[in-house]
Length: 150
Ligand code: RB5
Image 1 (cartoon, protein in one colour):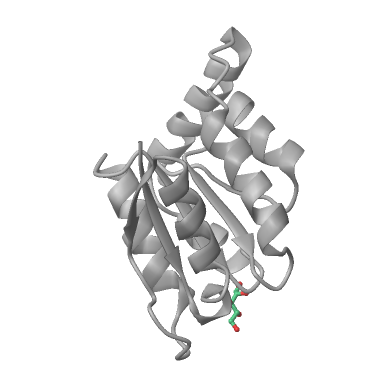
Image 2: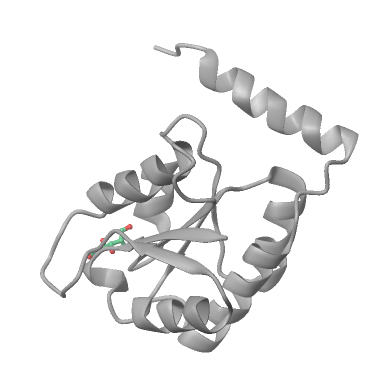
């Protein structure tokens, strides 16, 4: 499985722990930056990661910023992306099972490396349930994306 990852300066210290976890657990990782602590706009990195997921260049995406919020707001503007902002393991598992989320976002200023690994592990190892009601609801999300709200 290939995972697209990205962060801004607010997530730069957590990213090495994420890369190590992915490498040690047999995932391929594509790192879309940023690559140092210089102040950048989270928007640009969220777009790079989500584009790779949308284009099926990567299977799932993971975004880190200070809170995870800015990244998740941007990600959810992109057609085909269902980004879940998670600071706990239960939500990370349930968003795969029920929402078929394809991008995960969290904040380095909110969670530490130990909890992050548990959250990432739950997200990457839980399949979509494919339950009839969950499929219907995800299809409704996709239908909403087709509407041109003004
Ligand atoms: C950067 O200071 C911070 O605003 C950003 O990482 C993120 O938390 C935004 O949602």
